[in-house]
Length: 292
Image 1 (tube, rainbow, N blue to C red):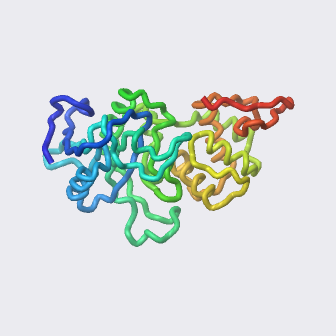
Image 2: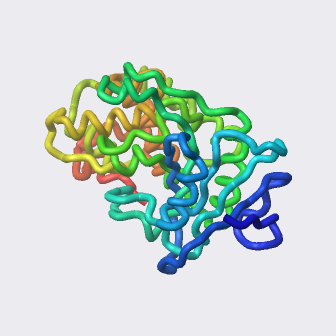
Image 3: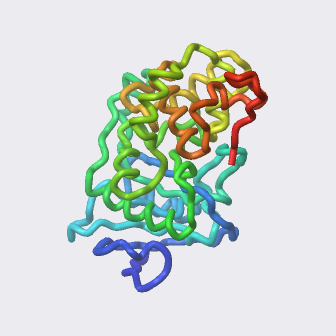
């Protein structure tokens, strides 16, 4: 690796942090989204070198500062080039997101190796260091601002590959990124309260699946609470309701989803079943909603 002291180029507005750059050529692309990932921290420098050679991510943020107490951000692939970070993925109608997203890898242990085969909710997840999240927040804010990435297009690996990937995990502070760095989407508490009280979830799985698909998740439209739907609900909960991410839909989870659809997709509160195209509204009119 060779060190680039922010003499120019992408990602250099990071105050006193280092930006180390190791890049391989890739395909030119335009970015409309950002995806956050989390590798295991063991053998970090070996991981960084391998990821750089493979063109895996645009940026990598380690889990601790270096000996000089400066936090490095490793720029592995130039932003104008494609990084191979998303793999088999889907978000808001688009598949294979490598070409359209900036990949930020946030180093974290995840969970102990002995928890590999236990249910997600029973795993002992490792927290993220506040100093690391501060670097991630500044980096992500810079990327989002330059590419004009919409809040609802800032996602985790688990969002774009539910059931297959679980990073960055339930302890990643999405709400903090939203509140302190204006990065990503987050529901308004007042809207959650409204939907919880006045439009509570009543067990309609077909409607739930349509709403999850409308927000962006690759959700089957079967009307059945199948394994893939449980994985999608779990991924949604891990992002927006980390206190409970068992994949079981309930009033609170769907209230959060409704609040997000209202805030970022213009779903009106008077439309009781607006997430389902062609569904009759309270007055009998045909309400298709707005997916813009």
